[in-house]
Image (spheres, rainbow, N blue to C red):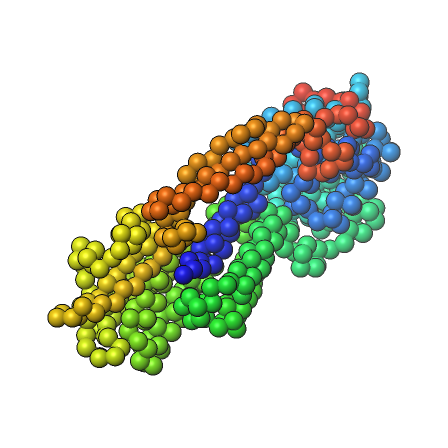
Length: 514
């Protein structure tokens, strides 16, 4: 007797196990681990670790700022981060400029443009040497007129391109801040990227392909969400199609084509929803809502398909004791599964319906060779028909037995439903009472050699024991893998390998929200 397969529980368990680490929990960047673009390559000025900006925008801004530095020695860095936790963007920008040393030493001619997505905040940090050109009023005007309108629409590429363009125009001396030119910063109205500073910006490729569109509006965290959603899809299909427990009603009730269409349709529907509401930024709450809606849809279709099959089997006059056992297995699945706890809404109606179905079925059990009805015994009465091993299984809650008996006859029928527990079948007596008794370390692992562990398994019914040795992996020196060359995602924001000039800032600049 094999334990009923539980693919849906496993799939949803791993889905919610994977997502918090990849989708919903955005990395909270700190001053110490924001990737320094100069550590990656001397011609880089943009730190875009979360992929908020598309590749075309990053390339154009890098070329833009490289030409600016070659012409003036002024250095401008652009940093776009999903989250810095509860840190305040203003002080974060000041500390980051000082840590990297943006600007030339002695001249302090550096600028840091920071966007923090979850706080919907942008900051300009201006070095001492540029405060005469970029007074606090000028960055504020650039932000409010050229950047904030685009950021509100979710077009962060245009916001950054426009902001960088205007900063460079000021630093090149092509525009002069003038409060009298109200509504038109430096005598110009807000324009689309590319209408200003040479052909560098105008050459930026438009984000017309679906990946760039998705990444611009949904963010890189959303990309990972869809990626892990795809992994979940494949894992679910493999689990369903490769299950060895084909006699279980959960599998036999759903043909392969139904499972395939069910996964495919819900996957496509989810992707369509993401693009339709592309103006909404995917974060923890919206991402959780999407996956919950998916779960509701998937479980609802599964539930009503299974109920339909139960009724269909009843119309075919399937033997009631087998039909009752099927219904019990299905009911136990949702009582104990992860999905049953995460998605109570679609399963509540299922539980009520199956409960009513069970109450009706259990009164109609028959003896196959006589046709006379049998009576379902309660938990106390059925103990008289159970063996010692079966009674122990019920005590351990590894199996739940139902017994039907006919009055005036010694004939009875017994069915057992495997419950979710830590117990498995004993290799000797086959009682569902075999489990891990102890796990001890015989020889501890070190940095130079592996260790040895011993697991002892024991049957609580017959006392059979089995000992299994296993290898404990050698300890690894975590410090040896702390930094890896030019990885953008590594915590390499130190100045080693960087070609920033060693500038500093006194906290000048401005910030805006969108």
